Image (cartoon, rainbow over all chains, first blue to last red; front, side, top):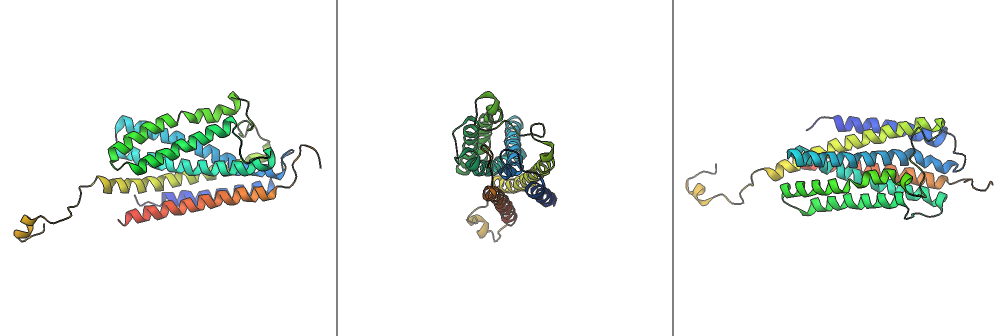
Length: 234
Length: 41
């Protein structure tokens, strides 16, 4: 658990994000109606994709833990939830900053924003659940079940803009935006994806180490009296 | 100024990028520090 893979992925992510953001901020043309404010899309949309992917991966880890009961899947679950929540929180803050000049408000309880907020609060709640439960087996099982339930909201978030009359625009993909916007969008998407994977690997390794420590035989607080009387501490 | 067309707004663009990279950098730092601390326990 000491390989350099997470650092390599985070380094590559930094390069992709630096190039994609530079291109999106200074080279790509402004959008016809939103002007320069639309440049927020190059970081907002890749963050949204990565956050949703993290939550989908979390649900896969939860199902795998419930089926197989191996601790590696619990460590992966812990990593996926935490990375997903950080990306989700960043996503909501970016969205609020974009909403202010375009919608005139920082936040609106429209279907996309509301379902995203519910998703974020649900997964943040699972992090809190994992913090308060000391027993590793109960913690893993309960948080896996909660993750499967919370993940039901992921497709609802994705399709909310087409199912309901939403203030939020429809899903931004290379198929729905102009060709001139493709390169920075794709570069930043690769960058955030690499960052997400690098962070998940590092966070999984951290969780594995903590689990090993928790599951190890407890160290006795006192040396038994009989051992001392026998003249040894072994 | 054309109705329905936004002009300016660079302060929002800088705020969104600045906040995003600050969040990413702080979280990367947090993950690495917690992982290293666990290695030494």
